[in-house]
Length: 211
Image 1 (cartoon, rainbow, N blue to C red):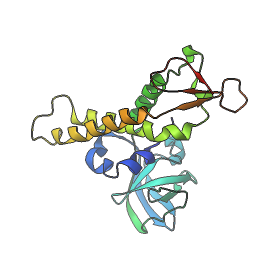
Image 2 (cartoon, helix red, strand yellow):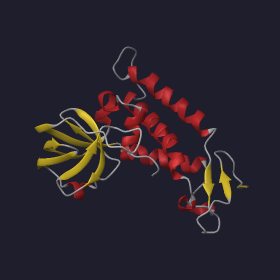
Image 3 (tube, rainbow, N blue to C red):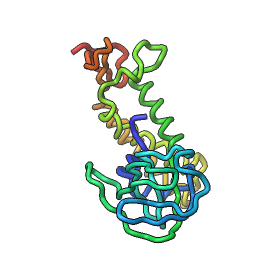
């Protein structure tokens, strides 16, 4: 995938407050934060066994952070959600509730949708591995995932005035932003395995445009 859980929080800081229940929980436990290191004192699943890695998110005493690196089965480097490369130290805590939520299924759905929009699939001859600018596709994929998350959370039968109905405008906003972003999205394609792009693929265009 091009996007990760931390990219969702970068775009939608209130995601876990609004629809945290719509995600999956990878690890739960109790932990301590010192400097930029989170150490789990107790946990139900080891971080490596749960697949926790850079780009995941973690709730420490109700505050969301991004995982910069998994250091061991029970420790990780964490940061406040960043807009650049520098790590932003979290608030120090001792023996507080810790949870690692993920929206991986929704990200996977958005990823497949974006690849289809770009006309990239195994059967089509041009595959995902040929994309040379995956970072350029991160934000649009995250927008697509947010649209899916809020739409599913709202549900098809959200009654007027209900908590679910209040999520519908958010779902519509992210869907509209996703569609608008698609109009300016372009995947740079390496056609001959030399590591350099020779063509550009845009959503809705079925033929490669040679540069």
